[in-house]
Length: 215
Image (tube, rainbow, N blue to C red; front, side, top):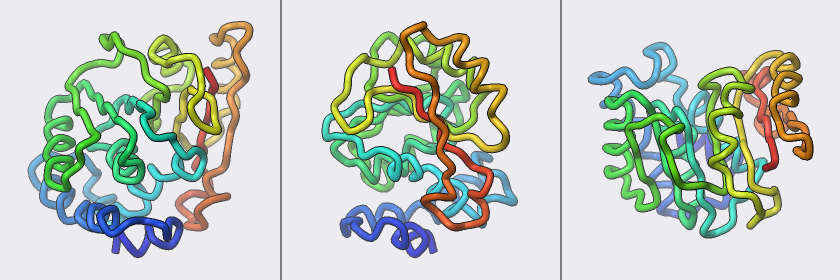
């Protein structure tokens, strides 16, 4: 089920990537019985609502080999785990303040053989290193998120898009975007908004958006 959904939009997957994506649903179902990392009603829509949603970032930007990506508030591993499968030559650091969720992230990463994931139980504000990109799915309002992670982003570009924030969130974001602009340095570019429905035609994505802020 998962593979058929993903393969429709990403037909270039390797055999290993296909196998890894296919393992995600049974693993999340198993872990969800013990630790609720995906809502009970949403587990049946794992492929579209979580895995494919995470991969909207891969439609927007193809990370270059060696790029470093921080996933803040990863929860059960979204968008970090699907992206780590898709970009095996990049390094992903997945952080969450809830320890039991990081336990699931580590277990699933180990089970499918991901070698490019580091899972950490902490708040992002305590991190000292910098990353090429910070990604996340709606952990808080956008101005607050930017204030948390802006210092954690390296200035530069190794790929088509300059380093920055890639944030997944739905609904009307005009107020948040306007408030975000006020918090950015004067020379910073304003946030860009992309409708995920331009990449995926499932009706779940009609109101879903990708926000990009270049560092």
